[in-house]
Image 1 (cartoon, rainbow, N blue to C red):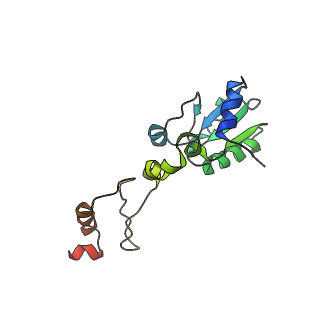
Image 2: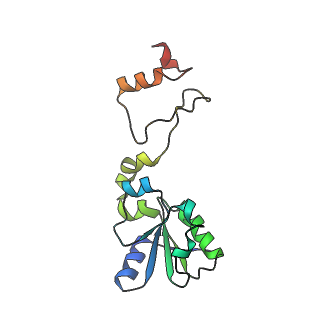
Length: 151
């Protein structure tokens, strides 16, 4: 079982002088949206197996992602590969950076959305973009099978 660490616990331990490796497993575009303000090692989740030699198994490792799901999977992977002390940062970058009332508005661009006018339509929408009413109508017209196509 993987232990969890809250962002506050992480900061307290790091300021107390504990040697902790903060491993960010988000993709490059995610780190550009919400950078980690502390010293960290960035290895995207898909590259962990190839870059495992960059990590020290004897040192405590805290894994972080957007909301805690991917970091938990990576923590299990690291634990299975001989890492003694692996922690998952509870709540991910969302819990550590943004007050709860602002999370949905700021990080809505993380959610990937597909056009939902027809089940077969796979046209991606822009992430985090909420169009005004007229531009929404224009964008739906190009979708085949859309009710808006008749406008």
